[in-house]
Each structure stands twice: as C-alpha cells, then as structure tokens.
Length: 326
Image: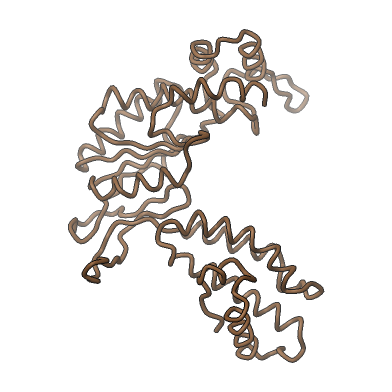
C-alpha cells in the first residue's frame, strides 16, 4: 500500500485521458458516458478484451516501464521482488517470468502502466484519428466503417502479440451501432461494457415527444442476473424473525449503489430488479404473517400502502421507482 501511494500520483499523471480503470480521478461511469456519445458519432465499434491480462504480463517489458517512471530504488526493489517471487505448487518451486500476484494492491496500476505503452500510446501513433476508451483490460475503438474496424482488429492483435498478450477470441467483436439513421443489417448490434449493454433502444425526442430508435446503454442482462442472485442469497423470504426495518437496513445499501450506478443511463431498465425486490418483500410478508398466507393480492396491497405512506423505508421507494406489487 505504501508503494502504491508513492508511485500512483506520478504514474497517473502520464496516463492518457481515455484510460479510465483504477484511476483516482476517473470512473467507470465516465467511460460509459463518453462511449455513449461516441456511438452516436461513429457507426462501428471494435470491442476487445485482453485474455488473462494479470496472469500474462511479461516481467521484462513491465519492469522496463517501471524503471523508466519509478525513481525510488527501494520501491523498484520491492516491485521486482514482488513480481518475481517464485510460487510453490505440489511441492515444487516455480520461477515466474509473467503475471502479477492475485489481489496485489499495485497490480492494477502496474497493468495500467503496461497497457499505457502496449495499447494507449500505440493507438495515438497508429490511429490518431480514431477515438478509443479503455478500462483495465476491456477496451473499445470507434471506427467509421466495417473495413476499418477489421483492419484495426488485425493490427491490434499483432501489436498485443508483440507485447506478449492476446486478444480474447470470444470476447472480441465488431459491432454496428444501429439506430433510426443507421439501418443496415449486421449480425452484431449490441455489446456489453462495464455492466451496461449498448444496443438499439426506443427513445423519445424531449421536444416533440416523437419516438425513434437510438443506440443507448442500459443495465446489462448479466448485471441484472447478478443483482437478482445477490438478493436471493440474502434469503430474505425466510427471515421471518426480523422486522421490515431490519430488511430495509440490509437492502438499502445495495439498492443505493445499484441505482446510483445503473440508474445513470436508461434507469427504467432497472425495473425487473426493483420488481424482484418488491416480490421478495411480498413473499416475506406472506411467510411472516398468517393472515397473508396464500393471499398475494392482500400482501401486495399492503406493500403498496406502505410505499405510499412511508416511501423512505426502501431506497427505490424513496426515489419514486416503486414498481408493481402484483
């Protein structure tokens, strides 16, 4: 942690504006927002993922970059020893020449430094006219045509190979940003980035109220599935020994974080998880009180009244994202 605090300010100062991951002045929402705007301006996106980044960083190249920017000898010594410390597997001592230790506090900043040279600066030299965005090992390059996107993908694969890395074969693809003005057919018209799914969606002009198709981000199906699993694992339905206030204290931090992040763009897409929370509360109510056993409608009506009279109890009620209890 001491080494991270020492080297982070100097390294962060050299990183380019479109590098967003693990930086104190940047956020994932910043990356989502800039991607949203660029998808309106550019018809094609190359979405790429680097396979096993943290496990495959070549020490020789990484330490070359570290020595260029870290000026404290004791910090250099610590980083080198930390990277090259041998592993033990089945009683055998294995020397390491690649990768950073799992969970290491400086692994993210070292990977950012490596990709600053392997990708960021390379893009500035090779394709200065194409906007790009990177968050750790996930990245996007916006292109003007399918042919351009294919060319960039081939060049990037070669560049990463030079640096000892590989693009993930199934997580890398070319996407067409289809909307009302871009009506061509293409197999891929959707991609996931930082928990958001970008795809053609129905939108409404705020001035004319006219509906049209726009290429927009919203919470991804996989993120919704993960949130649902988190709620289910809390086993709220069976915790009949606690009060609704106790449940609210447990759920509200989760809801607050999800709504703050995923509610930034297309908040209506959070409807399924908020409805699932309401259904979970209704199931809990029917188990806790005998008079509601087998009476879904009565339990739902009570929750509707509680949401109306005490909207501050749950975070989504407080924000008016009440949903349904049917």
